[in-house]
Image (cartoon, rainbow, N blue to C red; front, side, top):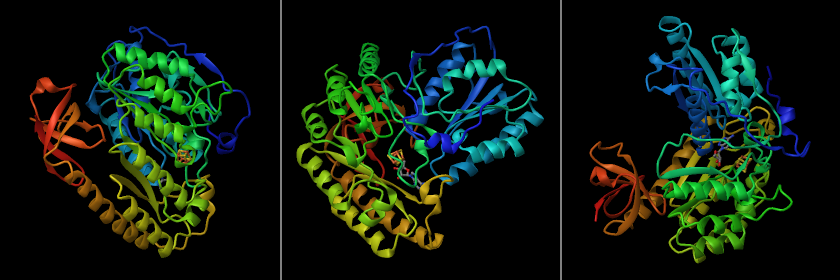
Length: 468
Ligand code: 5AD
Ligand code: SF4
């Protein structure tokens, strides 16, 4: 049993990162006829971790079910970024408890992901939620089959607060046949003062470019049309290794493999180099879409957030990208109500939004996370005031999103169709090169292909179109 510890999670450079191949158990008779139900919350990193969990479970005989009542194992892959995720997860766990009580007393309930890395959450589970059988952390996913085999009658915790290893030789059961996530690095060393990620995901550790390129090449050979390079802060790629190429060079080499669409998330404005902009501009198969979190438009607040750039530096970078990358779409993340944010600070955020006219923005009210430096900052703005700011911000953000979407009406654009539309089961859905969601009147045979789509209508958050 191992419990998480924030003080240990805060440590950096304690020891060298270990690189090793996972010792994956492959024996389908171990859990033959057993079913698992997996629920994923949070970011792309979690979605991709769930693809790993699926492969690990299916290697030892599990099959997936979409009905909780039929499951022998329920796993919740959780997110810790904001407090409200906590309530959702514990609500869901209540439903699991009910199933265990009324339908299947042998049900195994497991919790993993970023919440599992929080000491307060583990303590709460230990004292109050004894029906949870297994808790494993973001560093321990590859050990899941072994943990299930070892599972005892009481809750087993396997959450290490290490800086983290780089485990290779992992297989994923990917959600899509054409769109794939590829981790290029794990963890984060930026320690923005509001953020829990450096504690839950550990130290920044880059995979070697050799392994990344190998994985991308294999994906291309297997018919994948889109690869998204994944990291908390991709432009810091390689900086933790003494002899590794830069992110710009990695992006270039991935693009040169000839994959039809190459994407990357997330970039930090702080180490976004000119070389990166040039590579994005040069290669047609690097998608002209950049997610560039602003967080605040006030340099004073940015400093308190530990973001390492000022409003002016952000705007310079923004202008440079727009000037060099043809038709670049830029989206952002913004936090309102950071401790000490005044109406003037907030107005600066609105001004930056007006100036940049972002294609879209994910907006959040500041959420206090235990153990982060911002937890201790004095905060005298009421929640009501923060909600009102969020509302004003969203009105502006939505206005520009709609304006951008309207520019597409009448145009024909390329869309990779990967899903059945959520709006209409007879339609397909997918994303443009600039990451606009489009619902498309198209034959089912267009699924998993890149189609020319004529845009017929624009909404704030999606487009409608038909195959041209
Ligand atoms: N409160 C509110 N929003 C947060 N984010 C990260 N931590 C917090 C927090 N404590 C937001 C940031 C980040 C996005 C993924 O979530 O905007 O870019
Ligand atoms: Fe969190 Fe900042 Fe790292 Fe992003 S860069 S994961 S916001 S600490």
